Amino acid sequence: MNYKTALNNPIFEIISKASQELNLESYVIGGFVRDFLLQRDFKKDIDVVAVGSGIDLALKVSELLPNKPKVQVFKNYGTAMLRYKEIDIEFVGARKESYTEESRNPTVENGTLEDDQNRRDFTINALAFSLNTANYGELIDPFNGLEDLENKIIKTPLNPDITYSDDPLRMLRGIRFATQLNFTIEEKSLQAIAENKDRIKIISGERIVDELNKILETPKPSIGFLHLYKTGLLDIILPELTALNNVEEIEGQTHKNNFYHTLEVVDNICPNTDDVWLRWSALLHDIGKAPTKKFNKKQGWTFHGHEFLGGKMVKKIFERLHMPLNQKMKFVQKMVMMSSRPIILADDIVTDSAVRRLVFDAGEDVDNLMTLCEADITTKNPKKFKKYHDNFDLVRKKIIEVEERDHVRNFQPPISGEEIMELFNLKPSREIGVLKEAVKEAILEGEIPNEYQAALDFVLKKATDIGLKKSKE
Image 1 (tube, rainbow, N blue to C red):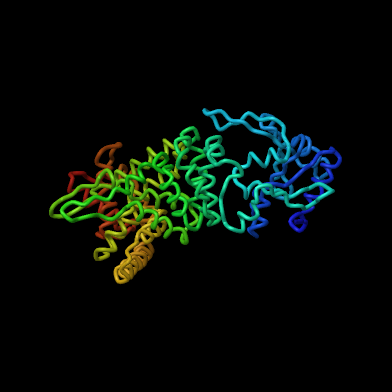
Image 2 (image 1 turned 45 degrees about the vertical axis):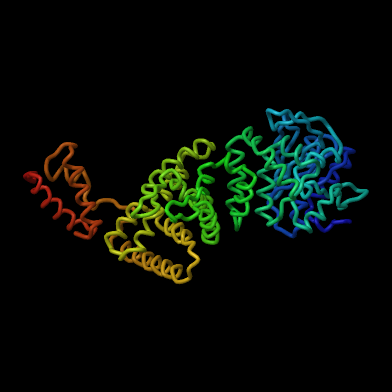
């Protein structure tokens, strides 16, 4: 079957011409071919395999292009890359690979196109379009990948047991593709993932997180996390999550299955945010529940302090998986630690004071926190569902109203520590902190407005109460 229409970008003709001049064969392979056949928008990268030197081909292509783009050469990997009109094109020589048990980095030797297709992770990624004059645009499909695309199946070109053992990252990639494309993983392949799950331990945290992020960025991440759970991978990667699947019963009282609830929350939040770190917050929002779970005869099951413990657990997870320990981690920590605050507000009478404190503590992240808490409503009771959402609408309106009036989102005290020092002729001391804290509390409690004169009058009165005298002017 010929797919010349896929190759209407002028770059393909140039690669074909460069291949001819070097007397080697070249093919476009992998994601570009798969996404064209699925009629998906391809991401801005193209993989080209040359039966010969990929580096030589990249240099020749650059030579033929009008602007002679810079070629990045990666000699250790035998690959090269150049950019053409915002498209990254990677060139690699066709190769055979062999693996050792301790590493996913293979021993590489030159090979044929067939060798190169054999080493691909999945049949749908082994599809190639010829860039050679004799059969330009022809689909090369040795493993019936086109049929697997039509049947929405993820399977490996060769024995899945060998494919996954050789490079265990492929297990996560398979689950990620199944989630992104809404495909089914072939049963034999799924079984091989379960049998090789311990091999994931040789993969770096950064690589694992890259795949988890891509799963979280899909419209329905629960598909991927259920595969990770059922194959045993999740218990190795995020045991804090699988611990939530332990439902107990004492004296006829059970508690909610917090694992499946968590997956619902992650799916719920997806239509409302593209922020992968807010999606991480949804994934981890209940992780403190397993270690804080207790049974009390009067109250039943309790999870006291799970938000605080969950926040501490976030840091350990980020460290273990080599995730960024910067503002991204602090954001997820904050979301987890505050995840119940708006829910408590929505259950109660919504007071200005409580809303002011929520906005003060959440700061710029208050809208994200509200999005997370609304996603946390997973009740199947339509009356309760409506009641919770109506209450959250009230909280949101109250946040806008209080913020417009009191400006506490990025709270700066109307009166500074320096001014307090000057008023009472003080050096840095505990009293300054006491007065600043008192002003903050008075504003949050609604005792005084967030205005300079009101704060000054309050400070003068409070200072008298604690025995400070105003300095003589």
